[in-house]
Image (tube, rainbow, N blue to C red; front, side, top):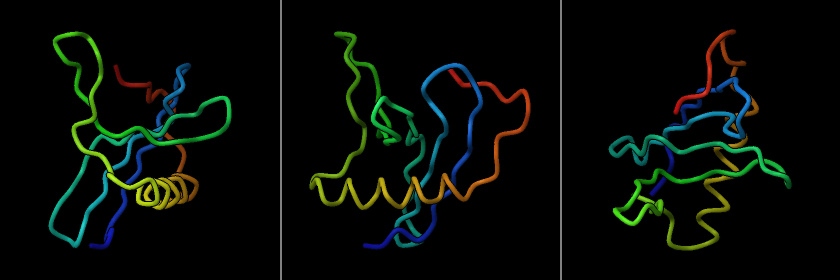
Length: 94
């Protein structure tokens, strides 16, 4: 499988989230709502998640191998660096 498209939307705001990404796999399958977060040690991605009944967030979709996560993160962060800045007034989503 190959990542055939990455779309990034930068977000301005006071929080740590800096953007959202969607990836397309083999021009046939899309994963939306991958969060781009700025942490203390730099940028990283967080996979789409849903809150469980117990209040914990659980990934809806995620890579199984750490190598796959690293490769995906590198590709998304490269696309983030190349994306235009967020429009003024575009605030972080809840």
